[in-house]
View 1 (spheres, rainbow, N blue to C red):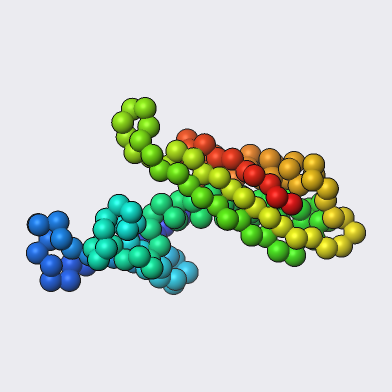
View 2 (view 1 turned 120 degrees about the vertical axis):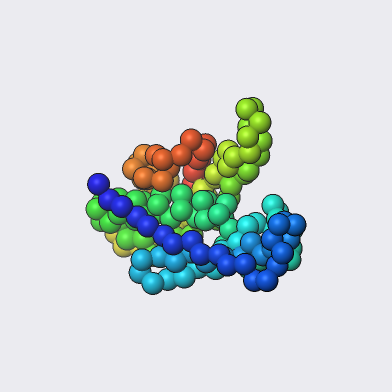
Amino acid sequence: MSRYEATISWQRNGESFVDDVYSRGHDWIFDGGLTVPASASPTIVPLPLSVEENVDPEEAFVASISSCHMLFFLSLAAKRGIVVDQYVDKASGVMEKRADGKIAMTRVVLRPEAQYSGKATPDRDEVKELHHRAHDLCFIANSVNTEISVETVA
């Protein structure tokens, strides 16, 4: 079993708070020492109560799925002798109301594009198979009930 921890830190900055007018800006502090400025999404909490340039939980959710998928893809490619020079995924998520009335991240679409070099450059079918296997192995994808699809480019 593995354990992962993060510290989420917020502090009131003199706002009255009980009138629901306060900054949603806060920090995510990770065990390696990195602090990431976070906030509610401006699509949920209007500016200036949210912080547009900070990472919001919805973006982090999409990024964690994409990152997990990419790490497994790279590992699988390396084990097959495929040299990946670059990997870019313009992932997106859709948050909407479900049939039960709850709002949820219902879909995440990964759009990975990789560049390869070396003798073992994969064809389109092998790339699709690597992405399929990476999706099956991704811990984050296995942890959520969000529909996740991969639209392979190369």
